[in-house]
Amino acid sequence: MNPVVLLLALTPLTASEPAVTPDVVYGHKAGMALTYDVLRPGEANGAGVLFLVSGGWFSFYFDPHSATALPGMGSRFQALLDAGFTLYLVRHGSAPWFKVPEAVGDVERAIRHIRAHAAEHEVDPERLGVMGDSAGGHLSLMLGTRGEDGRETSRRPEVRAGSRVRAVVASFPPVDLRGIVGPSDSFPALDFDSDRAAAVSPVLHATDDDAPALLLHGDRDRLVRLRQSELMKAALEEVDVDVELIVFEGAGHGFQGEQARRATAATVDWFRKYLSVD
Image (cartoon, rainbow, N blue to C red):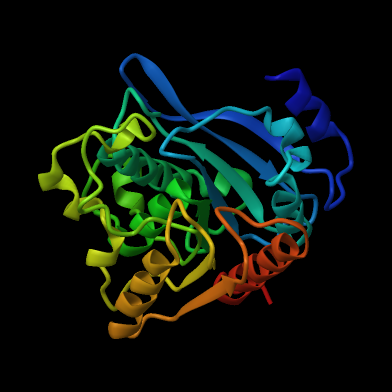
């Protein structure tokens, strides 16, 4: 057993001192492991939130023991832990080696694995939410709109578990990839056959059984335009799925200061509401 994990297991925990289980393997591809980290607060509420580690569909590594100290992300992680949520930091196969459709397949595999093994972390498998920023927001909405029930007759625990989530928080997400797929120096994950773009565009897959979604977007975002979240909101409203869009005036591709605090508070409230904490 990892000595750090053993030490945490033997040490009394508070809400601000999560137990960390690093590098849980949920699959393999191209000879490499696909992993997620688990951060469990001392006073867990039984619900879990997946954070999809993805920017430009590139999934980067950081030490999960230092996750709450990361600039731009750590305060959100800490707020969710303080609210009692168990966090799953999920990584997928990265650009430029893998493209958007492969990343979608990876996070679908991850949610199935997390649900199948939720009891090991004292998490209710039916109280799972997902969140992410930009490409991570896109992948979160793919889980929210394309999740499937488990197949009870399957011999594989992950397939029996299913890929649905109960709630989504997506920050400045691209939701319609048609028209932007093709060779790209900035975003090589978009370099795939344009015929596959519709299949990985969550705005095209809204149905009445989708997860409620909170969308967070700046009105001066020049990388992913506010129109993307507006389209997603309209699509979910059309099928009577609960959706809210919070627009941050003057914000670009990311939130700072008071706007970041507002976004974090809204995220915690959304998961409290839809993961039945109270």
